[in-house]
Length: 200
Image (cartoon, rainbow, N blue to C red):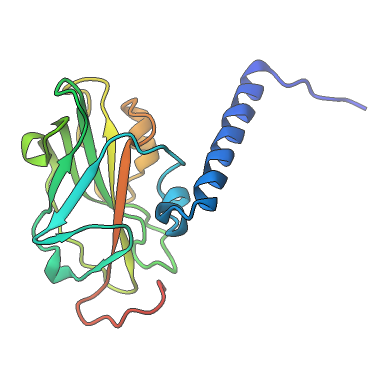
């Protein structure tokens, strides 16, 4: 019988995968809304929130799972980023992982907004809008709109992708060495005359 030896690279990958699974189980057991809403899994790997992220559309502050209609999200939100050192810069990504429909998201993810070089303790108004805000207009079903915050390695180290369709947050983060997110939130959005119910 032949037993394949695992290389250092294989064992390192297995160790990292086990750590990711442990973190996911821990978040799930705490009822983390990003896990329950399948944002962690579909869009993100498990992460630890390190910075505050406040998103408001008009007078409504986004909390995980909040229901908003297209008429409420026509204009880009006000986004405030926490942190304690103005020398740290952040990238904000907003995606829809339920394109074209939650039951068949074969075009996952659609990039709605990308802002880079946001100094800590400020907001998107102080960053560089690399991909302009496009308001959500889900054609069918209830779509999750996910806002993800990454810490950059330095200023002007993240650039705009060439497309919005089939954007991959994980690949984008890897390409620019952003690591895991430092904060994230999401809201649900459906057609103006949608009637709630299941995310089909």
